[in-house]
Amino acid sequence: MLREYLLLPLLASFTAAYTISVAKSGGNVTTSTQYGVMEEEINHGGEGGLYAELIRNRAFQGSSLYPSNLDAWSTVGESTMALQNLSKPLSSALPTSVKVSGKGTIGLKNEGWWGIDVRPQKYSGSFYVKGSYKGSFKASLESNITGKTLASVEVTSKSVANEWVQHEFTLTPKSKAANVNNTFSLTFDASKATGGSLDFNLISLFPPTWNNRPNGLRTDLMQAMSDMGPTFLRFPGGNNLEGETIDTRWKWNETLGPLKDRPGRPTTWGYEETGGMGLIEYMQWCDDLGMEPILAVWSGLALNEDIVSEEDIGIYVEDALNEIEFLTGSVDTEYGALRAKYGYPDPWTINFVEVGNEDNLNNGLDSYIAYRFAAFYDAITEKYPSIQVLASTIDMTLPGSAGGDFHLYDVPDNFVAAFNQFDQYTDAHRILLGEIAATEYNNGVGIDWSDYHFSLYPWWIGSVAEAVFFLGAERNADKIIGTTYAPYFMNINSYEWSPTMYSFDADPDDTARSTSWHVYSLFNHNHITNTLPTTSADAYGPLYWVAGLNNKTNSHIWKGAVYNSTETVPVSLTFEGVAKGTKADLTILTAPDAFSMNGVGEANLVNSKTTTIKAGKSGVFSFSLPNLSVAVLTTN
Ligand SMILES: *[C@@H]1O[C@H](CO)[C@@H](O)[C@H](O)[C@H]1NC(C)=O
Ligand SMILES: *[C@@H]1O[C@H](CO)[C@@H](O)[C@H](O)[C@H]1NC(C)=O
Ligand SMILES: *[C@@H]1O[C@H](CO)[C@@H](O)[C@H](O)[C@H]1NC(C)=O
Ligand SMILES: *[C@@H]1O[C@H](CO)[C@@H](O)[C@H](O)[C@H]1NC(C)=O
Ligand SMILES: *[C@@H]1O[C@H](CO)[C@@H](O)[C@H](O)[C@H]1NC(C)=O
Ligand SMILES: *[C@@H]1O[C@H](CO)[C@@H](O)[C@H](O)[C@H]1NC(C)=O
Ligand SMILES: *[C@@H]1O[C@H](CO)[C@@H](O)[C@H](O)[C@H]1NC(C)=O
Ligand SMILES: *[C@@H]1O[C@H](CO)[C@@H](O)[C@H](O)[C@H]1NC(C)=O
Image (cartoon, rainbow, N blue to C red; front, side, top):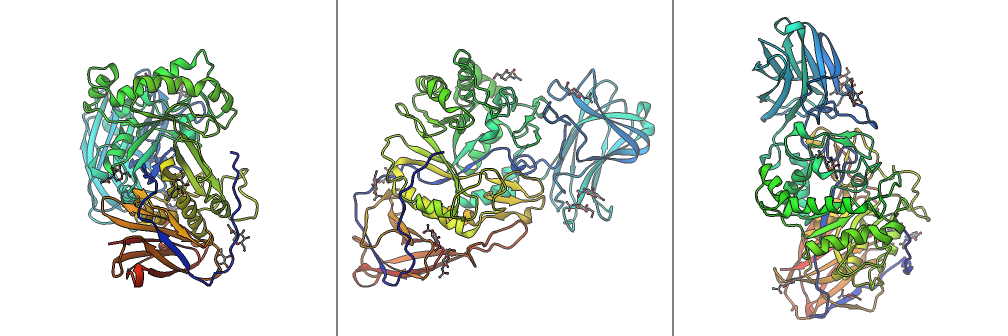
């Protein structure tokens, strides 16, 4: 990405107060400069993360990239387990199953996504088994350290020869386990099974999920998002949408229906995914958090730089139109009927479709400009005029009603230097800030792309720098569709990219809301619907700000951030028409130092302090902001 910044003065010291006055009218209407979520299957953010499935490698899915294997499984008792592709598989989507054979009480054990959280709540499980068996199964949760059984249930066998039969069960532990070092076991009496063996597949266990949805999402992570008040979800990626190869791209039609019909696919981030968190689950995620879906469709570019030719692009355009029809069409349409068949007769509304991801990279830009973007833009706009189609880059001339997507990963200083970037953006086409994150420490240079392991977690000076950048974006809110951090999630036990908005392990009590989460949350909960012009004799830096109005609450709002000041910054703020004695809430975020970060299982270090202050003589709000702080003042 080529970016040019106007360098801002490096203001080092400050003694006099910043005097800022906010006009009554004349600003820009905010379309939706709010803060959303960007998801893709990375760092076990979906599987082993937000997707609440507790069993890892539940259906032995594999691909040429990641062949099926027995990861996370071990045997119980005197037994062996072996993967097989039976002539009668569970389904064509799930061809590989495990055969467990031996003597006495035998079975298999799963260690979950680096542990299993066991607490007094209802767990819903199921498994498929093939083979004649007259006994019963035992499903249990056990401590991996003491061997103690934490919950167990007998499941009467319905199993018969030559058929795959599903069994369901629930487990309700009586108390919370000491830690997440627990396993799930499924055992049977080999003497009552013909030939002393049985075949198993699709072994699943879910804790309670957000809104109690079957096949649903992890409650602690949903709560953390809900508390931030996100307004949109960009899905299903990212690099993961693109795929390593054309054939391994994300295929919407293979993420639908019963779990046994979902083949899964190799992610672009080092592992196979099950397809359990599919298109419908993404839409339910939007529904559950009141987020606007920004649906990304595959644009004909894979990460290995294979590009679909102009002659063939029509197939993929058609596929995207089918996907949109699947989501939005009435039950009288072909794909709307398919949606209804899966149990969702009511159509969803899609207002934004993004074509691809970062098509300016991987040698994609020439073909994107030459024919790929136009093919999608023309077809979608013609059939669905109410949908705004977004290009995945702004390194091109955007046609008609198209918007663009701008991503920025950088060092904190460069975010601050980019404060006025959108003042310079004169294009009429709106942009999504679809992936924004300070990733690497200030080094006087910029980001080093040879290493994805930047800071492990967002850290305070990075979050303040992001805040400064957002203030610049909010000032130009009419040009910005929305802003989101990326990537969103990281399972600390297995990740390829840091930092992320949230990080976690198997224990929901360990989930960390990052320092950046606190900035997003503060800004999101103080939404400016209409910006207002501000005047000040003082230049931006070390204090940066935006002001405006929320026309629903009738509050005046001022947002500010202090970056790189040697002293506390005094502020004298007036809003035209706001009289002496008016009360306002002033919230100031600070952290112990520039490198404070919120880690998995650690305490939150961001201090949020809200005080009520009163406008003094001539309606002046007087307050001071310390170095590296983010603040919002909202009149009551
Ligand atoms: C099952 O079939 C897949 C796809 O053909 C193959 O890659 C895999 O090795 C087979 N597994 C076994 C255990 O035979
Ligand atoms: C569980 O304990 C074992 C043995 O001490 C250890 O190897 C493993 O990493 C622990 N797993 C978790 C999830 O804590
Ligand atoms: C259980 O302990 C073994 C070592 O004793 C370890 O290999 C395995 O990862 C542990 N399982 C979990 C869930 O931590
Ligand atoms: C999904 O759609 C693709 C075309 O994009 C097609 O190649 C594939 O066979 C379809 N998958 C299923 C399971 O129908
Ligand atoms: C912040 O201060 C440091 C040290 O004085 C300086 O190197 C850096 O350029 C400053 N950054 C900005 C954005 O002003
Ligand atoms: C509030 O502002 C929004 C734009 O941000 C506008 O769409 C809406 O009509 C306004 N409502 C009122 C009551 O002024
Ligand atoms: C409104 O937008 C213009 C450019 O579109 C920008 O120059 C100006 O600063 C914005 N005004 C406010 C009050 O944010
Ligand atoms: C303010 O923060 C910057 C960046 O971390 C640092 O260089 C500077 O020393 C800080 N100033 C004070 C007074 O702490």
